[in-house]
Image (cartoon, rainbow, N blue to C red; front, side, top):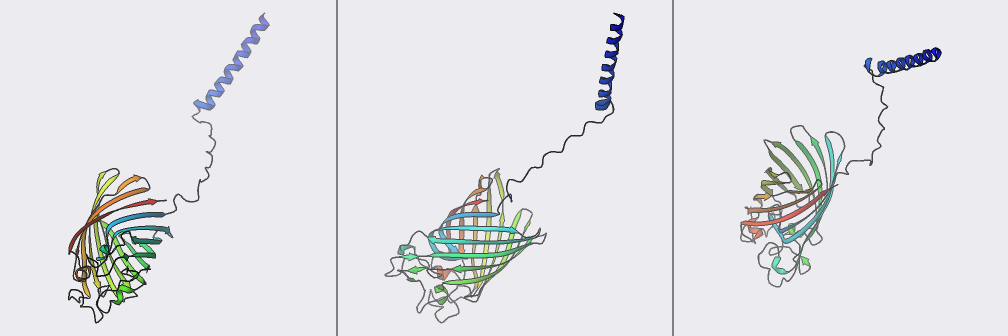
Length: 310
């Protein structure tokens, strides 16, 4: 019996020493066991996003830089932004536009169709590219855009090019045009502002435009954006530069302010990548546009656009 008691005591002492040693390693020494490194997660895709935006739009009245072109017009565009460096981005895209109303009552340049005009069609395709350079205090962009007009710049009346004026205005009958642009944009105290220069190789005319806007958050998913636009043209689709430039309303102005426009849009974030933007605009035609538009110098129109980024 005594032997067994000693054996039991020895076993208990060994067990106590083992527990003590374990506590010393895990706790008393302050050193925790080294955890294995987390598994390396493989990326689910090569890129987080393609950098593309698909957009569609509708407008009750289609104005091109102050010039009234068509009514009830729809459009679609695909844009892609490719970062080349931390400061340089390459942009490229395509746009399609056409009018829904093709009867003579929606003829451009006039409220009422000329005698004998029963149909009017307008379609436009654009291909464009640009390079943006981040200056830190703003962005400088240089680009090129090519316009394609299957129905001519001013559309077709009864299937024929809608060339305006006695003897015709050659500018309004072009089927395509190339344009070089330089634009600078920046933000300050909540405002977004840009100014751009555009040169049309086809008609040899220049156009200048500036835009100013301010975003007012309304809810986490909607904001209001008032904006202002001012344009100036120099022999830019104004009917000037030919012997018939005074045939419309007796005005032959070829250079000057084209228009000014105030807009209010309400971008609505439908999802993190989709936005619906209704808008309303007030436009005032100026010296190189009001006689060509042959419409009210002050006009209200509106529309809506839907864009999806992916």
